[in-house]
Image (tube, rainbow, N blue to C red; front, side, top):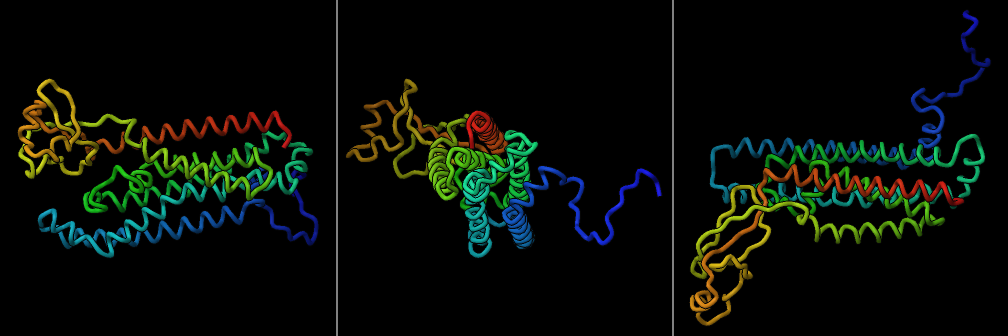
Length: 331
């Protein structure tokens, strides 16, 4: 045997971790393996379920490829297929909040509450290196799980995007669960949970604060989601009341509606609707056209990547501040 060969003591039956998980990564995995394994298992179950539902949707599209009227196709899609897709979107919408509350908040707060942080940081490992390892492994697990879920759900939803939820893809939950959004939003909520775990010593308190903050962020995001993007406009001559308005391009979603006067001034869409003589009201105000603001379906990828970039910038900022704070204060 070579002189450099490593030998094991006789009777040593200990199982050694894979080389890739030596040192701090192995310690972090061992410490949080229940949460990590649960996340991976739930992700696998969700992916398998959505793959099966995607097969059902593909079969539906194959059976209705004969060119039926669009309204007929929408009516045919309603039922179990539509409910399954909507239910999956609503469940996925909860993933970022679950990540923040159950992965992010206890990550550091649990160690602070049990005193583990004091034991670890008195060894040869620096506090920032220990924090970086814990955060890095958790971020990796989060990215893997949410990327798989988001990619499979997008693959399921795209062929029927005009049929699902009447094609309202600009609203939650569809916008926030397809493309890169599920990953970006989950990372943002994870960073919020980690920050509260560093600031607060009690795990339950950190989880409650994370839940409240992420819920508030969700409400703010719902009101701002479309404000970062440039809409398109469709203007048509004014029509008589009761006549159908401008028709959106296929796959587009409505953003806002206006009436326009001869000078280009904008008035609310309902201007003159409650007047006794609507035509006379329009003449007095000089209204000559109806305007419709909308987003085309081809704008969706750019809108999502822009939103995801904003989330990721916020995530990096929060984690950087958290590491800076933890490095300057006793945990």
